[in-house]
Length: 209
Image (cartoon, rainbow, N blue to C red; front, side, top):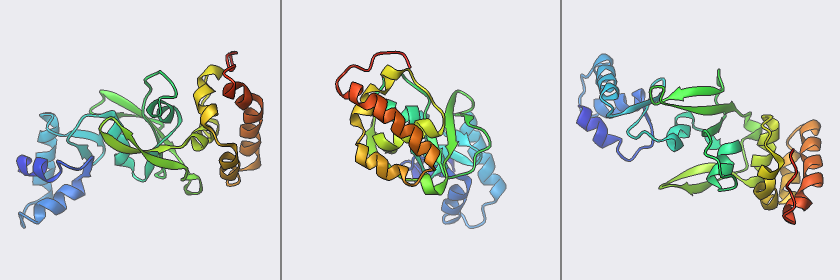
């Protein structure tokens, strides 16, 4: 049965217990939930599959696929900057999801890795696109949404680390996005743009934030 699970989900980034149950019951009508759960647990123990969160598994141990366990989602914040090569640092995958989350830092793959989770209200769930990251395609916030999210979730960087992001921001698009947000968020982001975009565009954004 473990081999069947591996074959069925080989092209899936993630799958759930319910996915496995539905697929296996198409082949084995009388199979019990307990048998399926025991099989998945043994596969996880033997590292044939990996547990991402409760009831969600993957055949691969890769941080970049963790977001698919929290669909609908996109990678934003520092992770978006990393994926877009706008910062040099390797950072934790930062997942923006419409799911309610209890904690912002969660352990995955049996505790060998951690990712950052942010609940994003549905009205703010926009401003992302599919990008190639390694050998897979993942949803990533565009420069304008990345900047807004950094302020919305109160992530602060050294000012020079905003250089690439600020140069990529389209101000008209940013203004359009900010119409959805409250006046305070819009004001803070636009004040930042007015002060730092021109120095960034001219390559002079060097002072500490």
